[in-house]
Length: 213
Ligand SMILES: Cc1cc2nc3c(=O)[nH]c(=O)nc-3n(C[C@H](O)[C@H](O)[C@H](O)COP(=O)(O)O)c2cc1C
Image (cartoon, rainbow, N blue to C red):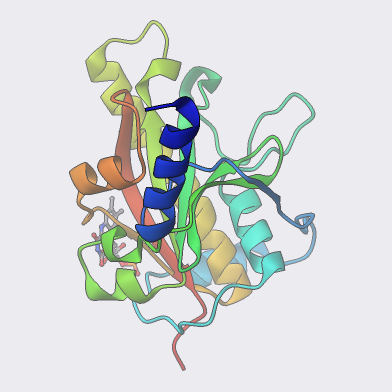
């Protein structure tokens, strides 16, 4: 078979299947709002887990603000809104929405599209997770934790994810959004559908949306 015939065959298979290779399209998020919001002590007073969501998609501004609050760049040297041990920055946030799945690129403040498939059914093992308009999947890349043995990599994955998750909780409390962090995820399945490398580990999920009325 010629090269051209192979390309046509692959294109045809992709067009007729629900699968797409990681397409890598860069989708710039709107500028995040870094001022305002609820006073911190009030946000702490409001922080809670909520498990009922409206199916309405998040506005562009809310999605941008959410991701920046979670783990965006907040200093010129590239450091983030959440700390990581030895500044390893080992976490990537994958974003599962109805129209596709993405990786948050904090430096570009952009979403890098992985594919256009609706992966919400894999976002969590509880029904509400499948209904939330946004599911964040916190993925730790062990390759970035240089010099640490396996035990330390696991430890720092487990500790550092908490800061990111709490940023999401406090942002949601401030903005009147509903959220819950979730350990109940099928890590193996998510690893497969998000096309992760062996060194990447799914740690937790977190659902976000407007509260159900
Ligand atoms: C590491 C971790 C994993 C959790 N996993 C789940 C989960 O899989 N599903 C769920 O509904 N809630 C989960 N939660 C939320 C807790 O159930 C919740 O935080 C707890 O009941 C206290 O409620 P609050 O967050 O409103 O204070 C998890 C919380 C943490 C910290």
